[in-house]
Image 1: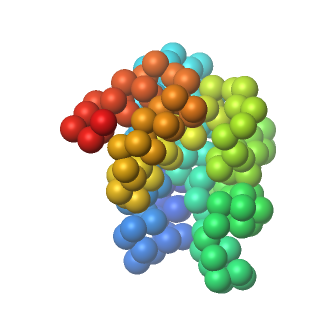
Image 2: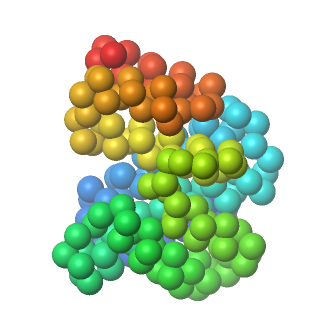
Length: 165
């Protein structure tokens, strides 16, 4: 079985009954995988990106329980320990797990993005959030200029929001 499929199944169990959260991470995974493949990521980086995309919001549940808030800051703090536990139980390679935890801890950090996996995760998450949060076209256009760097991410953003931009 593909490791990403195992992680997806584990995350569905983790968020059992929370259709909104499950749909979110599945959509982010789809965009991240597509952008990663279109940008020509090597196999290991793509695998890491896929797992990070599936687990990027794992900190929401515990953040809501502990703080009554799913703020990005809280997610970035609470997510890595939860991901480490889940990914460890699945026997994910420790180096991949550590990188995924780093990405989870930085997926709401838009400054100083200097790796493709981080860039693509941020773009994929934004693509989904823009729709789910019904962002105004001006906010989407601003994000395109300030956040998006990959050719594939820009193309997807332009096409998905063609009617609104």
